[in-house]
Amino acid sequence: MNQPVSKVLVLDDSPTHSNAIKQFCDENNLVGLKVRKNRLMSVLRSNIDLGAILYSENYGGSPEENAEIAIKIHTVRPELPIILRRESGETLDSVPESMRRMYCAAYTTDDMGSLRKAIEEYIFSLTYPNALVRGISEITEGVLTSQFKNVSLSWGTPYIVRDRVIFGEVFSLIPLESSWCRGYMMLQTEEEPILGMLNSDPLFPESNFRDVNALLGEITNLIWGAFKNRYIGDAAAVSGSMIQVPLVVNHKHKYISFGSENPQLCFLYTLTDAEKQREVKVYQRFIFNLSWSPEDFKEIVHDVDELVSSGEMELF
Amino acid sequence: MAKILVVDDSSTVRDEVAGFLKSNGLDVATAVDGKDGLVKLKADPGIKLVVSDVNMPNMDGLTMVEKIRGELGNATVNVIMLTTESSPSMKERGKAAGIKGWIVKPFNGAAVLETFKKLAG
Image (tube, rainbow over all chains, first blue to last red; front, side, top):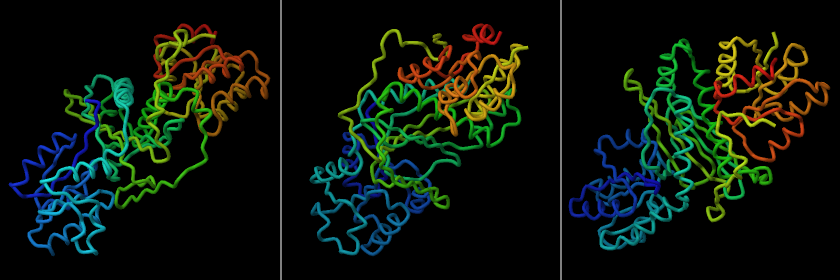
């Protein structure tokens, strides 16, 4: 459950190779997704949590058609690595030069070592300590259940994403600064489902988007605080690197760039009010774009006399 | 009646804390950050307890407490921090400025109501 997986779009119709690809996905923490050709572009435009694309050189039916599809994919989602399956020769050497930049690597099903190497390089390039992955889920569960009363919460296996497409209409960002990580936590959600839940509460019958913003802000703040207390401690006060990079948001394409190609650690939480048939999805992403040293990661052990439960007062 | 000033940049928290205190018969004012908190406190001598967040824009909660004691010369108003922070160095800074207590969010009104009443009395 704590070992992140990654979703890959498998654009490969060959029945001869499908078992090998499926087995590879199963053994390498990949979730293979298939899509009908006529829905490919709409799926690419809407799917927000892909790690890569496994693409057969025969997918288009002809070299020209295949090149056209690859160019379209690369144009729509340049951040997604396209890994090309070839019938022979696990390199891109014989691919026309103009097309080579569309692909990040090539493989054949006779030698899956090349695919494994590409996956490690382009998807699982950052190691996330199990204690961190587990802790994030625990912290976020506690915060979400404190803010949304009388609803059930579920979340799936965390996963690694390469894409940069924003889910929903509202998102929050907060910096994470420590000796072992520098980057951001981002929460993304949709406005209407949260408004629906807020408005069904007699205390907030006329909530508007500002209330959604405030709630998401407070959820972000609570998770950030707990994360800091558990994993950063006082070290936050002494980090203070001045290095920053611009973040770019393109509203038209619902796209956010952190200036880094690093894959992101993603969690999806679903809050369900079964009685009122309402559901809220919250995507949580960790983007360690400025620095990442998991070897220095540690959990802060508090002294016994510092332990005061949340909500209780420590009197001085 | 003695008044409690709730200082937090999050309207969600302000509404939650102020609503809870009002529903328990307490008189409450609110401020959106440390700067606003200083203005409200200066203008209203009836405020006997300040419940404040730490991380806020414009002026953080601990700086606000230091200014309450220093610039305003108010040594008597009680201050409780209500925050996601729990780092020892921040608590030490708060103690040095004379705060009375520290609460780690989320807010649990039932656990602190009686103490709030005493400190606001």
